[in-house]
Length: 163
Image 1: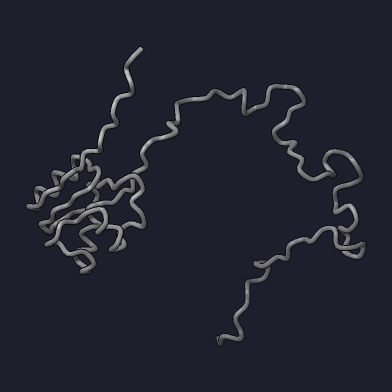
Image 2: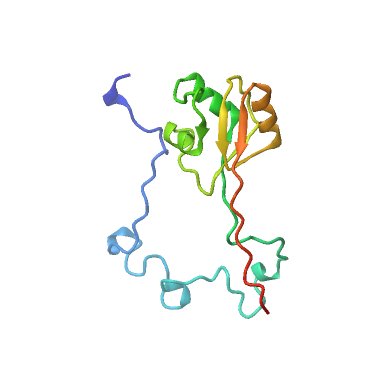
């Protein structure tokens, strides 16, 4: 097989139906929507409206609470850090900070901080300084002879308590 002989399997590429492109197309003029009425017009969302009956999405029970300002941490596993050390992208002799993890390509961005989890094994003696870590990750790093420092997030000053 040569490059000029390559092609899609039969039925793999289907042309998109172009509506409203003249009478010869079979779907011209009204573009398959019929004549007049709500469904023939643009910007119609009939799926959510049930004609005055309480809609399904409002009848279903709601659970839990989504905190609007919660912290979103970037997560990295010990095995991935060890892999980058083995490949020479991270220097194990220097402290591994959040900036080092981002600049070496372990993570794309640090979000509200980086949290280290214990998945995978770490064999190098390293010093890691991050926003958060699981207890298993701390134990694994210390077992390898290193240290994992968790930076304490600065607590917000309490609001004015005067009544």
